[in-house]
Image: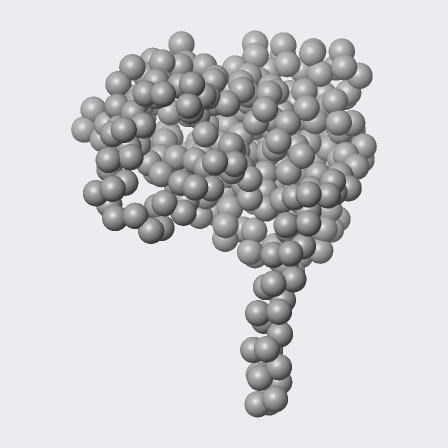
Length: 302
């Protein structure tokens, strides 16, 4: 028993070095991308914004079927028609992911009409863009129900079958605000931080589940209607991401079985700075970059 423990202590740092080197090599050499031709993809919030771009990207990369969920039928219908014109089978369902029973009922309808879902993309989200004291209680609850609890319900609805098939992937379109909150979006930042913890726990829990993986995507401010009006101090230095870029990199992360994706890559520096700098220095960074006041001009989706 003692020798076994000593062996484990010796092997552990060697294993860490091997994994770091392997990851570094993977950044340089192109890796083989997962074939999506047999995959059925469900995207929540799939009618517009990043969700619509994700549907296009999955279709372009050969996904067999695409299912869109959302609350606005007009947007869902338009996106569905566009994907069908690309030659990919596509269906849409009206569903509020913040409503647990509605999620379970709609998931059952999807299985009956479309079949098994092998890639679930939790993209649906809302933001109200107000401080705590200015926020309506119902609006605060809505953010938590859709942005966080909705992922609990959708994952519980589709993960069991993925585990049976030993084929599945859970994707969370999160936000860098899960790691670094800003004033004026307390509902969104809180819900995204909770969703990040949910995915971190889920990802670790799937380590012993063959064929089933997870990906968490943490993008910087993306130019969609949802964050319309948000302004940073140096837009040329910190330009908003394009939805097309987020969608492309997300699908690539799924194909590479990448657990965590920060966009752009410079956001890794944010994680490091938060770990080593004192709070006063972090506050000065927020003031200098304009994130301290970026929600003052927020309008949101109309």
